[in-house]
Length: 311
Length: 64
Ligand SMILES: [Zn+2]
Ligand SMILES: [Zn+2]
Ligand SMILES: [Zn+2]
Image: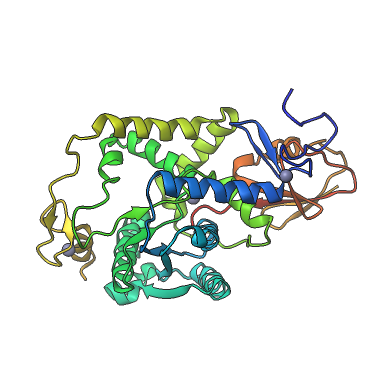
């Protein structure tokens, strides 16, 4: 018998007996809208404090695609701001140039930052590399996510630095994190997990933080829906080429039948990190011979990509 | 019972599956990839469905 679930009746909140809007299967708890909002914000605050993600005086660049995760991130950070003394935010939207997808999310990002009164910067792939993503990808569609990812990371980092930011926050949620662990395992590259968590050793390398990493994707969508902040937006047309899309479907299916699977994957990652603590897993940092950005080899990923695209 | 599907399609169902979870199972939707409202209010999978309810199934787009 599940808590608060009576056959033939809709379940109620574990905190106040209002009708439930979500069920948290891992801790077997139902929550109403009010308590879900409170719980999500509290968990994000705990993540930020426990992992030391935001300090007094930080200027955090929030990557705002306009989709659900980054929308929730900016809303939550704005509300937590009074509890983060001396911190400030700037939202940055990268316009990749994806027809039929970007216009709606861009509109959503603009209206959100206006409503929250957050400084908003927009950067484009066209300004970064001279073309829209759609043009760059002609004949290379199957590599869409790799190419886009490299350029988006660079555009975001440049814009963050230009805005005087001291760190970059992204909307990656618990599902994203669990997918990454599994994808790295599938590719035979588990060490990458530990390598990418390095917070940077160079003055030009901004730390990246993920305040939503403990929140399941469904709870983020629910958090927005109960506050009338959820909008149905188009999905990126290139996701169908991504390994991540397959891993996402596989993992949601598995999580559904075995609640806690995603959490276990993340715990495995933390365990690996603990084993590696004190061991130098960061590759020695070089500087790119063309652009001077920190990188692990002779040329950075962006410059290598520029060459292969003939830019 | 009226069901609004993720693609905005509308399906009127003669029989009632009983709960949101049973409905999702019947139409082959993964509960983790959608959120569901009953008469405009968000509900969990265990929520019951009545004959006169309007159920909306919203896909959670990946990313963002
Ligand atoms: Zn409650
Ligand atoms: Zn370079
Ligand atoms: Zn996601």
